[in-house]
Length: 325
Image 1 (spheres, rainbow, N blue to C red):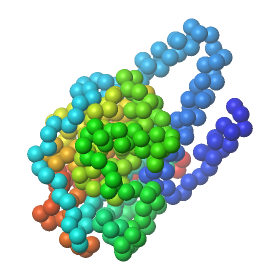
Image 2 (image 1 turned 90 degrees about the horizontal axis):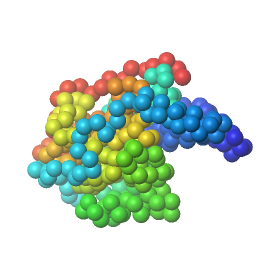
Image 3 (image 1 turned 120 degrees about the vertical axis):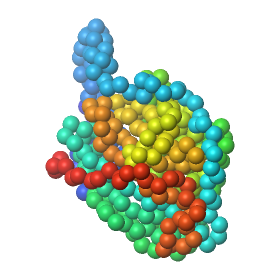
Image 4 (image 1 turned 90 degrees about the vertical axis):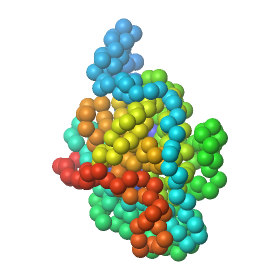
């Protein structure tokens, strides 16, 4: 292992007391790269037959991924409800609840840190809005009320130029997430029936889905692109973590070891929830639930008749801090 690898290992093992969801994704990726480097170093010392046997053994012990059931690489069924669009003086509204436990044995997926965020976002295209937090644990966020251009946007998200037609958005995201694009995304090992660019696209899409600057119309278009990626599976007539009817787009990142599910409202195609499940457990170690979403008339109220998703069918998952890692 060269000095650069040793520095990378030391950096990833340094404590990170407060982090955003993007930080959690990046930390998980660094740990995965280390695992692959270590596995490769061991493999070079083995005979070809022994290496082949080990590879088969790994595949035999992998939990069933998205290849089991569902429909491969198809677009979502047609929506039946139009999505709300904010007029001048109105705000896109989202009330979200992120719960991220990190059980023993899953540290290489969840970064070794439990996290919770219960927050409400009001955001207008002029960059004004408000962020209100109810519960925060190991998550960096700037709450407050913001005037035009003042709403926090650390990732520089601007969806005003995003096309919403599926084929055009697919090409736009490919260009945007390329190494020389506006927002480079790492190449992520896709499911066995996918390609590296599919893993890269999935990562770019899921990062955008969780950002309050992304409008319902763009979210719906992103979800349709996700359903069409190679290696993705579409499960219709599913149920999200809080009991709402959902179409579910499933993708097995890291070669199928990290199962990510996007829960989509069948009527509007807006996002309902995201869950992350590792190959060593059937239960998600992290969930992101959109409890309410739509358009509000002010920064002090929720959406009235302009909601883009149905009400919760049951309470959001609860946060249960685990032991220190």
